[in-house]
Image 1 (cartoon, one colour):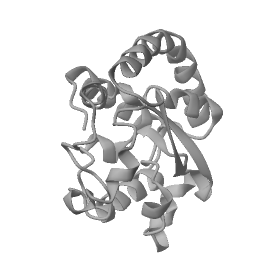
Image 2 (tube, rainbow, N blue to C red; image 1 turned 180 degrees about the horizontal axis):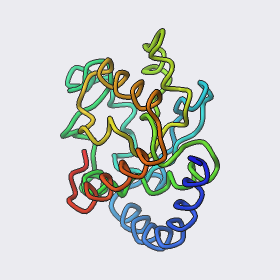
Image 3 (cartoon, helix red, strand yellow; image 1 turned 90 degrees about the vertical axis):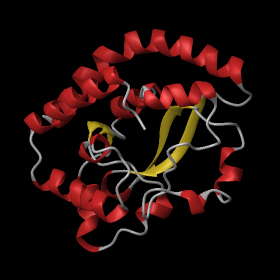
Length: 192
């Protein structure tokens, strides 16, 4: 049922968002050097790595600058900076509006991700999760999820607790409610 919902909605959304995405791509390229699509290895269902796709929101050498910024992370156990100095002006808009996530529809269609699920972590963050926290990997990671809707600023332990509850209590209705809430956040531009 979950996969069916993913394919149906992603299939419907991919054509209109591709047209919108083409405009975003031109704006990204005009603003700064570097690729339009940001690719990064994340940990997926059952611990399998996959390459996540996003519109690039940062300067081209953002990874090289990360080490100098880790002290400013606002989420214990996760690297999260609300006003990240590496963001481009267009990137800041894309993040606030969640539009940087649109290429992940391709990840959903491929089966790497779901529309709703736990946040896909980079391998170094995933390695910090032990024991029952690994249950979060029983489902595909999501473009959105309950933790993301809470604002994404919680600690790693809080994220694991939210994800564990999601996996244990999953229902199709829960996913539909999460998608509706996400749509409301996108319209209100409450992204982080």
